[in-house]
Picture 1 (cartoon, rainbow, N blue to C red):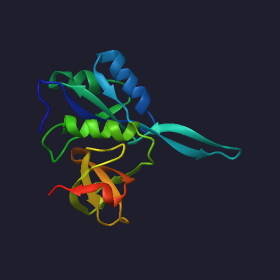
Picture 2 (cartoon, rainbow, N blue to C red):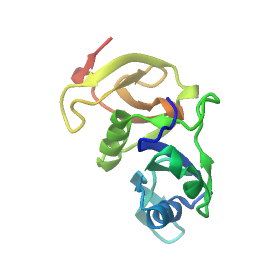
Picture 3 (cartoon, helix red, strand yellow):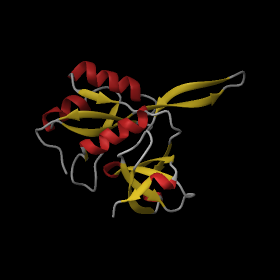
Picture 4 (cartoon, rainbow, N blue to C red):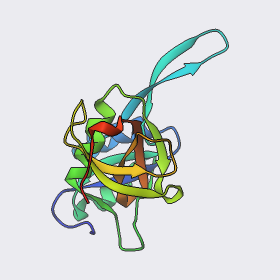
Length: 172
């Protein structure tokens, strides 16, 4: 799927550690809807430990835009480019995958990011109970039983969390 004149979600590469600044600049300078998924991690300094908010996907932010917005977004300071998929133009992220990303990022669950090019993806499943009820994803074969992956296929990324196997229903 490629970008059209209808507003669609795309992923933007940012300079390292500039995700928040770039997200804010895009929203302020273009007026477009943006989304930067964040999660809390425990960081250790020499004198203390602290929970801090960090981007869920380093060097990525998301923008809902049309093809006519490409140049205005690309010219924002800190934007390195757009995620492209198999040389077919800018990768469009379906609404369903963005909704799943938002639901996972808004949860309090521990999240680990894996590149799906390094994972063997198994059966398609649906979560039948708990805070993620109704989400679809895939079982990760090479991890211990109970790991569940929400795949964002156009980015080759998966968000992995521990889910009990008894609340997963195979869909295929």
